[in-house]
Image (cartoon, rainbow, N blue to C red; front, side, top):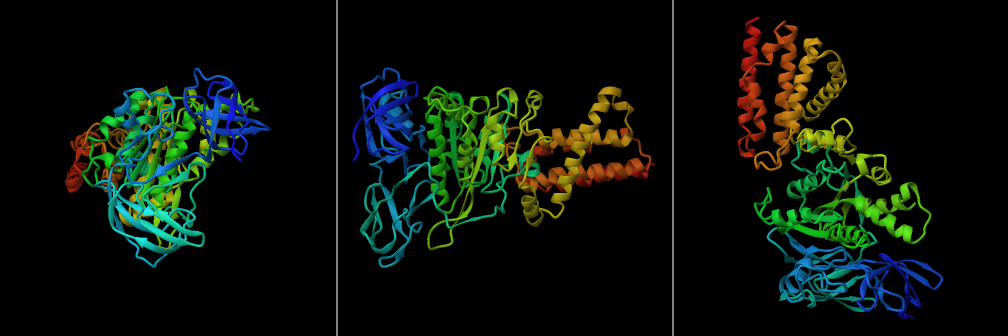
Length: 586
């Protein structure tokens, strides 16, 4: 038996109410006369502690609290692609069009358009058996996305009605006869956000998520269904990398969650994405993107809602059999929100004031990623990759949010403000970063790109590590005191850093690099290094080796278009001819 409650205390985003009989943990309620969105996070006797996802200014004791009889859930159906929502899935573009630039408290609009008509194409026939997860039909949601209508959880039985029709998302498109009676299916469904949706089986990840960023794909890759984090201090380029990954990663669907970040960064996404073209299809990036905007000036409690709203939408598209990539920028802001709510709940603080459940709450988010066999009678495989940015204060990677994240992710892309100040983009430190997906991606690349992929990568990383060892000696005695072999290492390491790792995000020829081009670029540098070493052993002067004209061509090779990769054969032939000429002159 549900009853209305009454506010007895307001403490920032936390409201305490009494009298909400029948309400459970994580149930949604509407708070105060403005009916603000809230979620019950703790119950002590007859006191219900509610985190409110809207501004609580002006809220006071004795105002009513109305139960909704359900957990926090999101609407899932045609119309998600290209939309921009806040943390509790209110359509910001619709609110802006109808009510202006500001979100009024308590305002509510359906997340999905109830008037827009979609054409439903059935894929099942009357009399077929339906189980949860079966695809009963589809809608062409955008130019790039075929939105598959999936039978929701709890629907199992024989299909008695299904028809091709044009209608709204609320129109009934099929009827399933279950043990409990007829179940009508529309084009949309609702799912609670805190519970991961069931899958038939989780698989090992075997295919790389190609991002087009050379330092990531070659040295610190992530797979489809993998998890990665991007920690770094302020100004080191976390958001720019997230934008790059959203633009160029070879995922079918992108879900971008701006969690507590600056509004101008989300504005950049809104302006750029409709203009930028998907490299695979040539269509607008918004044709495969869903945006969740919870900027830093929005209520702090809604940051948690935005993260779980984003992952639930991502799971929904994964269950259609798509490869989905979710970008969370940044989970540190979510951690700060947890710390504020925890302190107002008067819970025992953990390290640096964060709640003791910080690690498990972070893990509950990241561990929803994976490569899976989806529910249903057909063998449908989907993947969900999660890439989260972390903003440690002062760039201190030992702080709790970063450490809690590192316990669950397998790819660590540590950003370095020193590299960022040197205009090195992406500013990923190749000495501190790592990826536990390296062996999987090496195996894939050796089989599909080139048999020398792994050997080339290993040798290049060895050169960069050797350069780091020599740098201290260079600072003490100068580079001229090094042996010729070590000076060559320093020069080739500079080539790897400046000619391969450095990437210009604003140059269309350089912003994205295919795996094939990445291998060709790196192999040219490694072949130069191998041949130069042989010449040094033949007593050729290092200064002569470093003066060949091909080196200027190598410095410009990143601007070779993807459709002209044959130019690398000419470049290598020219380099080999010049080096052989040095050998004959000895």
